[in-house]
Length: 254
Image (tube, rainbow, N blue to C red):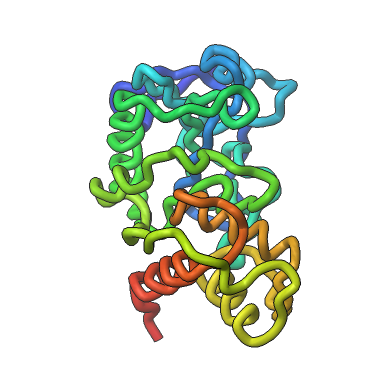
């Protein structure tokens, strides 16, 4: 493919060779947000467009707000890797991937500039309108790949996106106090927590044991929905925020 007309008005086009057809779906039904995790946006853009990288995303949003489209929305970009959400393991076929330029935790993680977030909001609004994507299907890379990925991280302003009706959000309960569930705990309360996380969409074994894998998923949940303290321990704030998010989900048709 030598080029294409951008799906997003105003986007620059720089074609990545790393894409293919969506598998088993007619179009995307989720958005996955990432940070680039590289020292520069220029380097990230080049890497996403290099055949040897074997990675890509549909869009890259630079810190100055410039939007670059690398893969058509109708095609499957290679951004999510090994991932899972609500029973789906081929997240790439189901999603639009947006890389947001930020050095990430490895290179001096910092807040996201206003121009950049404004551009992300406009971009997401367009994608949501074109594909009728539900708010609870706008996710972090860390949600679909807990432990393996931590982006876009605890500094990403999900609350601000929610004001524009992007993403699923409830005001998190105030963090504080001792954890009510922690490493080594067993029993019905742990099983209930794991069941709630699974019901929301996370890939987690319901074992009734608060093991390391459970802590990893709890930390991923906190990083997105209760970022003030990301420690992988289930305090009352974490459990309450999760419960209210579940209550706020649209009711499934019987």
